[in-house]
Image 1 (cartoon, rainbow, N blue to C red):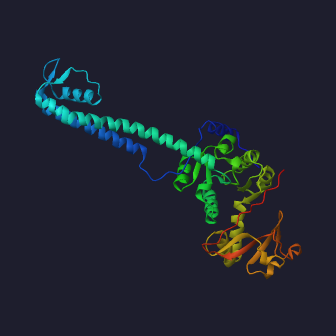
Image 2 (spheres, rainbow, N blue to C red):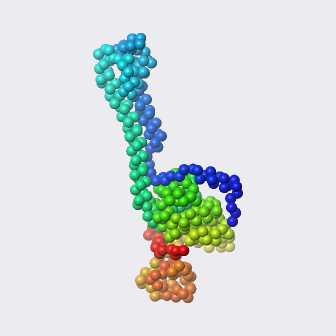
Image 3 (cartoon, helix red, strand yellow):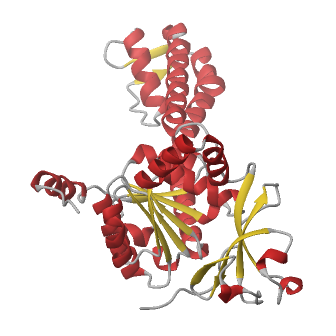
Length: 365
């Protein structure tokens, strides 16, 4: 296995300085910068209207400096009046100017304050609401799925798992890219921005209470480090990792991965099978795509099937899971099915088709 060089190590050390945070899915609302921009435009409009009103009746105002009120004086008076500063150097002296202040300037002042105070309160309220959502999310998150890496492999893994009934609220995506996490939250998943090789980042994803972890990083050495860190935080979690090179698969298993998928080799074997037999390649691709055509599902043995041979039941049985062993349907050890067995079958995909999660505890080291 190739280790990163000095430049890569230095780059990773620099990435450790990047802050990490949790982002929850948000409802489709207007962007904050646009909301603030609208509030600012409204405040400026109120200010301009006030300047026009004062200047239109500038003869009714008195300036202690030179007695006359020009456009600049009108803008000055409008600013200090709307901000409730009120120095008193420019005052309304005529009845019309005073009436205008009562009926027009005062409501504009109240509107101006409402815009400014309302913006501040909304920001504080939104921040408090976000903190409350985050706290409630942390306290309620149990037996969830953590996906490290939201690239092509990570997206496909999430879509496959969610197609079997897993709710999006039970998925947490971890990725060092803020843009990638934004895409994940836009799809309805919670996201954590940060380097998943660091324990504090995985703790923000509540890995210590997760049920399963899918590691779909771009580099094999990163997958090894993430696996080691995750296994240290949660000894019972199920870890499934993807590697590019087949020679690195044993290292992933030694690091604590329960299952390792070699993406490059799997794609190569599918390509070779498609060359030898295009029809067989199409069937394999159909089996891989969850939710359409044929699906591979895992389910428990029902009482009516106990004591029967795997070949005698209605479904097409491929393998039988007994204990921690996966046995072929023709293995003499599974001549008769037991209630504690689980079946891996090929079925026609329907909206009700789903993989029943394996709820058995994993063996402890």
